[in-house]
Image (cartoon, rainbow over all chains, first blue to last red; front, side):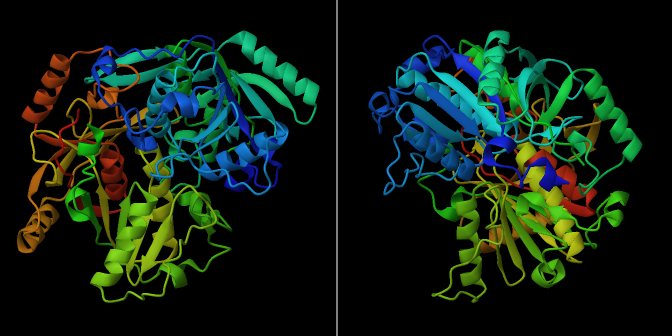
Length: 283
Length: 283
């Protein structure tokens, strides 16, 4: 059931799925048109180069953590503040994107926490504007993480999956982007060295099971993830089990809805990276 | 620029894109597995058949209006309350989905207003759970609307487009849904009679220009809509103009990111319908 998938009964740490990608060069935008813009409006953040001093606001950012839910990204910044010893019991962490309800953004010291909503199109709008924000702010050596829940295949609920590769609904490591009506294939490879580092961090912490595996990224939560409880379902329990079994044979540990475009866009910005997600059994 | 596209300077009514579809039969779910569920959890609404009396809460719903932004859907219910003479100056309209931050939902009399976030995957999760909600609540004769902003092609900003047909990035009237790894084509036709009714309503109101046309639904806001101001752009201003010109020749009046799956899922629930969207020139 969905409540199991999202791990409602698990601790915050245990129910999270993490996706880690790291920028080791200045942020690369690949758009010659941006130089000619007098004012670059990051519309869905309610920020812009003319209205905000982006280098002053964000120039010290070294870590970005993104996840679907605005509430969770606020909890995350509170948690980070306490870990870094930077919490102020009287302070409310203000939402930097308070001028819009599309995304929420919080910052403490060098850490930025941003929500991205659900699904590839929603995270892709956010990543376009985030990459431009980091570029305009002249950030360097930024590491970016995605933390999210996912549906696991053959794993104990609460396990964290560090994603080796993001694959599509046919278990292939690619992301299809339509540009001017033509389909362009983008690579979803992640960095094996970083994945190893994450697994070692988890071993040191010794607080939850962590596993390296492939993560399947789908366009739909119900029919797209072989669930039986959507408004429409044209397949049987046996069809579902066969599909998930084939996914497992192809190395898929879990299913979510944002990893492929996250991997593709972060890679295009000049990163090496990796992904992880937790295993909960989808209904 | 994006601020033009979203019509920041326009009145609420003028900047809205409307999508109209109508249920004229009891809500149809096509899922034999639902009957066997003891508790159907509408997880992303934080509602369920065991925890909530859905017929008591929603049985009188006759109109559903959906749109991307939670703030806008709250404004909409306040507007509807005043139009229906049902407003209470002292009342806050409570968010029925207050237990989650995935979607927001408001109700006044027979009107339900629900946010759906951005993009096909996000609205599709909401529609699965909305269709099940209306089914469990035993609603009949429900009319559903989508109201949203869009990027117009060759039309004055502020115009409202009533959508004749939702088309994909190659201007074809279809929605591709991947189920168990196989691509299924779904129809995005809308009802011509209802579109006519909407045009007539607009004529009576005489407050804004309204036009019948096709709406293109894309998976991406920047590269997918030929914008020049994303983090990545591999094409020229001329390529962009050629693509938009071809779209216009194919009858496309505007571009947004949810219409195709909205049309497909509403149609599958047993509706006849139609869509509309407003014309703003994308950058």
